[in-house]
Length: 420
Image (cartoon, rainbow, N blue to C red; front, side, top):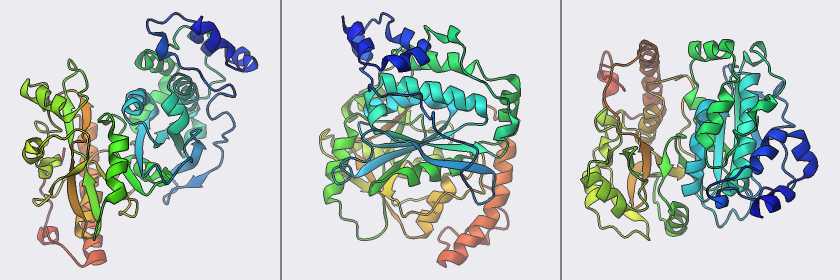
């Protein structure tokens, strides 16, 4: 009975136009509550978006479409929603968004990179699927698009074939996206392998898409703790910052065998069992070391009220926490492409500019999988080396801009630090 009611609530003409999704709405599910009633005016995502024009980035490498698709409640009650989650992703990693949105019941600004028309069509169908299945994405997620200058040179696809029906199951976003991605051609995949993912362009796009006072900048595979939205809203209503402030949310790796912890106490239990640990602890400790996880873990665990656990006093170069700040922080330098110096260069500039970093508790974020050191692929090492050379210029500019070099990087003839 529930399935029939859901079917009847959808615009019947829209269903005729998209029979693959209509078929999915009629499939039996183990848990019917996973199938949420979609808006009766739903259309294929980005249906009226014309990617033949848009604003260019400063180097005219990428074309930008701000607010390509706006969440139904994204602009509601700005005074009650002080924090927006800004995140970025390529099309093939967008399956992480449903879990992020389950835990983050608030406004989200999502920047998505689509290499060519094939990836754009995959994006259309998968975002439509997410908006039909997950109410918080439909209501609160706003999407912005970034496409490369080569977009029109890559293969086109008219539509996803109708043999996709049966793949659209609200319980399985991973499976759904995997099926859709099979429609990318070899030529598109080869282009993706040859070209560098513009991480900092994407971060800037997601940040500026937020319409709230505070922005929580993350990557798509970083999952916030549950109930963090109301807790953070309450904290920031009375937060008193006398200078430039950034509020660090500690990040932990979580074993894929575990269930995502619902509280700080739950996280502590996983750590004691060896099923969770500080982010990049084994891979690249300088990435998060200054957060001082030991101090955070020893802080009393009031799971209902956010407070400052401690101040970061041992800032180290290469520190790159996930943080919340008013969006007047320095932009991410878009000269850095791919891996290496993308986030930590921006955090270093914040440090030089006089920002103070405060670590919050009991909120946290999680990243699935206990990471281990392994040989870095050649392409990643090449990107690191290219960005390391760019950093020599960047640090000189930062010194001139702020007349400040507390880390004495300019005195080094050559930066010898190895980055992750």
